[in-house]
Image 1 (cartoon, rainbow, N blue to C red):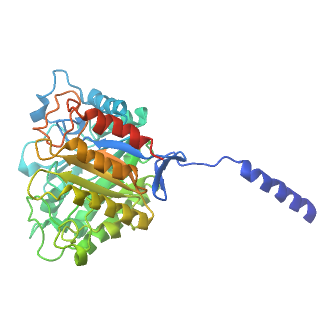
Image 2 (cartoon, rainbow, N blue to C red; image 1 turned 180 degrees about the horizontal axis):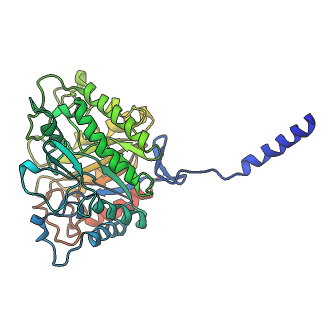
Length: 408
């Protein structure tokens, strides 16, 4: 009997190498690389966020800008079709839109409303039902989505709506990261969204917030005098990413930070490196439940701009930090002010793109605005838009998308 059992076990062991390897059907990471179905998934993508180019935030005010008969559901398909046609693999968009009933009339579209300091999630056809249309269209087109769950800034609600409805005495912006009742409200909204799409093949990552910092844009005070620090923000990221991982263990999680560092000893009074923002890229990318890092890079044309060589070092520093953590990083937003005549967009984009193409860790790249659907593209409306009428569009969008999607 012992001999027979040994023979049986030996026979079974011979079968193991013949079994097909099971790969994740959701995007994931493998060291410094993204993968999908066991294959490399380096990607080019874009952001579609607001009422000028996205169905999600169509309001009565901007509806007049669109042709008669405009349909939000049809527009969702138009957006995704445009993403697909451009060659983009990933689309980042806001999965939040909230308003305070005390501050004005009800908008045409909202995901969460606040009345009497209490939030109510809108599951209706002018609420999360619209986000359903985006997710469904992305699934059908095999486009992946980064869904951002709140905003550091006051556009479309964001953190200050939570703060001003919860902290009635000294409602500082950074209370969002430390107040237990705010955490409860935020988790409730996160659960509603994440649970709704946790089985969707369209999700690339759940993103905690757009550009979370110690300071905001109001109407609550910008920052409490001394309580906020990189340790506070990093702790919040750790807690909330662990919560999302419990809700959905099968999709990646990102933060949405600009990628600022906390290196005061070598910062030389440079804001992006001195920790004053509350961000700490080096610490956050090492957190267990954070799948990859994010970078936002801009040249605004203002005196606060850093020179182009500085931006290249900025990207290189993120490459090094991500590589040390053993995770990939994406340039999640980037742009150059099209009205800033001192910049040659094509030349600078080529330098950024070349660095990324030769980087081992920067394996995703997403323009801020290069996708305008169903209305004219106007750089005076969004100075970072890359319009198809741009004489360098083929080089900085079409050719670049093909190159990055083919990166090995």
